[in-house]
Length: 334
Ligand SMILES: [Cu+2]
Image (tube, rainbow, N blue to C red):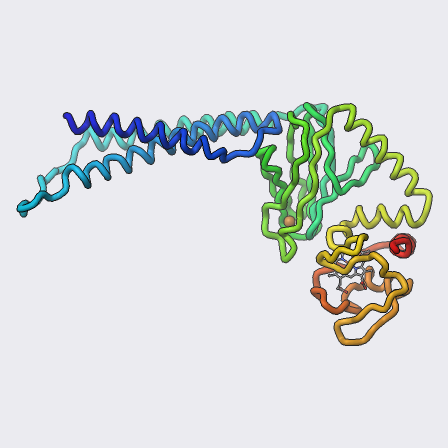
């Protein structure tokens, strides 16, 4: 009986130390959404269960290794034990109950984070290799940053144009796949003003690592100001071909692969491209005139730029006017 008492106390002490040790590591980033409260609650109970189970297995094992080790001169076999029915019933029923309780807690938490607010703000999200684009349909805004108002439920309606991506903001806790051919929903109520980041959490090709965009939770006033400013920019841009061209490069996700400031990304920069000599993969050079730019967009594989992956740029089905507008925009990037 003495052994049971000592092991019992040790199990509890080690379980408590393990729990507080794991807690002190700070495994989770800040809580920035209403949904994360319920998820962190469940997570905490799981850490408690894990700490206890770890201790329950490791402590008796190490205790036995030390206390019941073979003493000098001992040569006989150990005591033979032929089953123990109450023990077997116990270790079947108790874990079963624990698993059922966790299943109930999981279902409860899932119901909580899926609760839909009928007044939720709708934002359309497009995922493509390797960029996120956010559309605010009520205002006709297309953005490469996701701005969210504080304390209001948002529903992201997410679509992919190519492969499976996954929308993940660790501070919001929820992660949702974006699957080609269907619209997946992601509901979130931001509760903490701050700058976060959405990262693609599904390996989606060679530049998967760079598929991240700013996510900014604003106060209602800052959010309204941003919406007003963006609407004005969009309205202004719509007046000129270059402006429309720029919007098209955001809408079509071109800027996921092309910079406008000289930085090398998955594709060549557009800065200073117009009128330059471009070196092609086959060793020849071509002048970046209107015709070359139009061809590069409609049929990217016609002429491959030297030093860049030849097959990654998808062809874009754009109208003649749209191409002309994009080319007009590219000309302004000097
Ligand atoms: Cu991705």
